[in-house]
Image 1: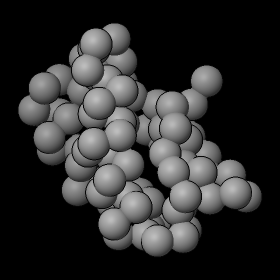
Image 2: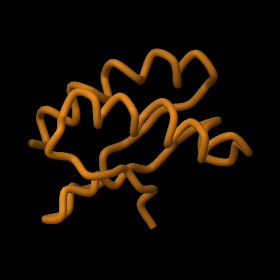
Image 3: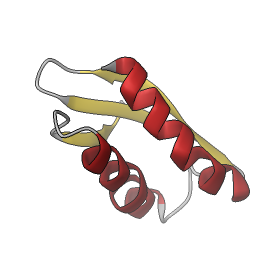
Length: 74
């Protein structure tokens, strides 16, 4: 599962990097929740929650139905 999620994140990374950011996969819980950490410009951006839900989560859920959601890592 981790390899699948990393592959999907590679599809999203160019958009994030264009704005000076990136995303790191932290963990995948037993409940199917993907925990990620936004990095660079995305880390403190006021739109980071929108990016997380509309770009990252939507792309992962579409590609990997087993995933139940995406959340920021603590």
